[in-house]
Picture 1 (cartoon, helix red, strand yellow):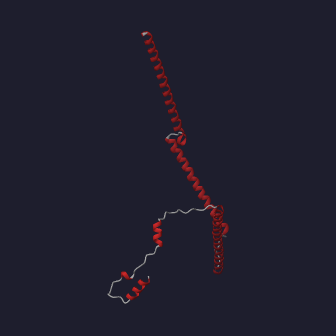
Picture 2 (spheres, one colour):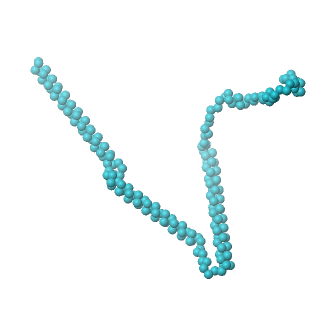
Length: 195
């Protein structure tokens, strides 16, 4: 019996050690997989897992390209503006003209400027009118749908509301200095009796 019990204890001990080793191996494998997952996640972050030097180079290239694009865009806008101005306003040739021709040219330019200002004013008025119509139509749509902006209600104390409704009698004569007998004393006594 002693030998069997010792043998069983030895087998149990071996089994426990085997289970402990398996548990440790599983933990080690899980830890390794977790580390690999972290490494993969780190590589995916940012600019595709590039080192610092390559990231800085790439950022510098991107910024240079963006600056160049902005310069080209500004240049294109300036050229478009110049082309539009040349198209709208004819070139002014003042060489070899006498005073009367110059005055006529100035008057022509002035009338052209006035018509352009009228157009600007008309367009601004049209835009304002359309914005007003849009606002009124959107209000009508909201009214028909029943969508209203609910105001924020604040709590009102009943006593304070009733106190506002109740009017205090003002005794203006009480605030005045007394000079002795009042010549209106009979009137006041008559009013008190009437009440």
